[in-house]
Length: 150
Image (cartoon, rainbow, N blue to C red; front, side, top):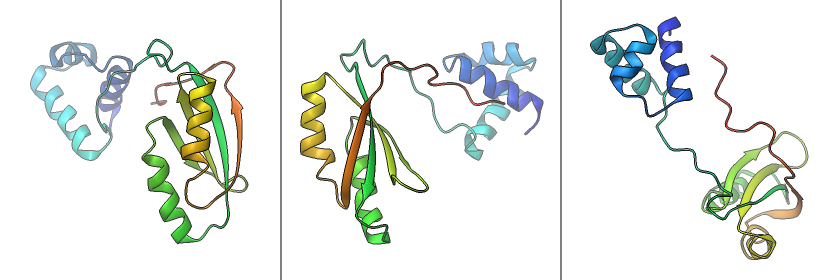
């Protein structure tokens, strides 16, 4: 990966809807070389896909919470049961396995407190292997969806 590839990636992070013509112009290439590089970046996995950034609050999902999950044990069977089950919950935006205690950090969105409580009680607390849950509400997002530093 060279400087031009990094420019392509930076431009796409800033605006994933750029046409190939616009992208080529911004990185100083003609269309064919830009297209070849773009396809190579996609094949290599450097570009994992394209998507629109949606505003959760505008879509009625303004309740944002973090949930810390402590597992009963860290056996492979427990983790293999928990991870796909948590991935199947659409309201879980991120699920990260952590070193130390707690074992996982989940970012969850919901319509309101009542919807969050139902999700927490009916789905998250019943996930396989969960020993303890601790949650906190997000007051304000200071940094989110930041482009990767290239």
